[in-house]
Image (cartoon, rainbow, N blue to C red):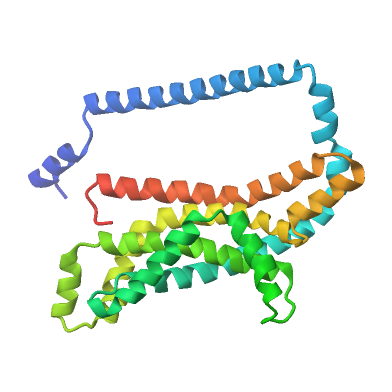
Length: 292
């Protein structure tokens, strides 16, 4: 079958020109060149840092105190057992924070004079626990609430979870509230014009859009929570940090602390990379003019 003139013209339009092919080849060469320069410069910088550290007068003492392979291997089983407690506290805290934060953000957005006491109470709560250091909240909750005698004896990990939930709910609820306020008012008006009530508008229209806007911030808060779960050790919970402290006290060597720190890094890196990928994806969509 003979090629139609329209098909021939379409093929000529879709095929890249020689100039465009040359530009693509130039960009590919520049990209490869940048990658090799980055690799070489990184290796040179790492080598210089390593040589500087090794030549330090106290390097031998630091190596024995913090980088002892024997002590690291001996501490790994107890630290991993304690890390399992940290993981359980992390996911229990994250689930509770997510639910309570949405509730508080919704209460903070209530309108009308009759709801002023609720808005004021939520505002005081968020201001108070965003200002208090987490360590002080852990002491107040972990030692103060059990001393009241209202509750049965609970493990220290439970009270550590409560303190983390109280503190992080104050932060995350403000993130949700900012996301809800960032939704254009026309969305709320359109939903109400369709006959949706306040809570239906919030659940079906505002929250889905707000969640997309604040997801990177929520993921960063989750990374911070991953680190702060290690503070429950101040209440006596035998987590990864407390297990490392016990090993340090037995061997008078600080290597177990380094092992515990690396465990938290390994736990946090996947979420950090996922946060960076999602933030870059949102940025690309915004630059292309897509609705985010």
